[in-house]
Length: 168
Image 1 (cartoon, rainbow, N blue to C red):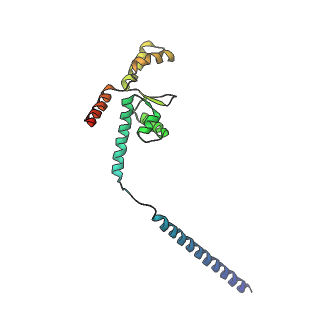
Image 2: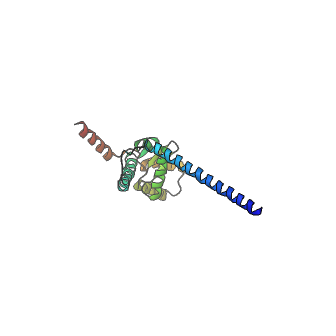
Image 3: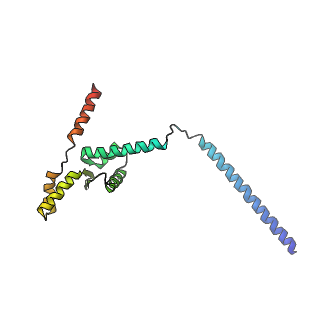
């Protein structure tokens, strides 16, 4: 009787295993059919290489830095629109560039980044060293003398020359 029960149990286990294998094969077949169905929906329009992507990223990064340096006081939303990024991505990029030492400046509470060159930072530091103790309000009023918020003239002339060339 024991042998019969053992054979019966083994037969049931084999049957369960075969059912599980059949079910798994059926699921894999259904997944393959689903994949084939969706595979036809996708198309590859353009292929690139990693080298081109890295080159474009470096160009984009240098253009990003140059744009900020040219405009001096940049609204973050305008910067994001210019480079087709989200505003938060611009903030993260500026923060990382500041930590790398490629940019220096201040982000104000109205959503603007004010670029401050190393020379301007040095002028402010020299003023503080000359004066000794300086209140923040006094420093803020005097910093307008040290920090130029107008876009660079040379860059503006370059832009107008490009416009004249295109119009001609």
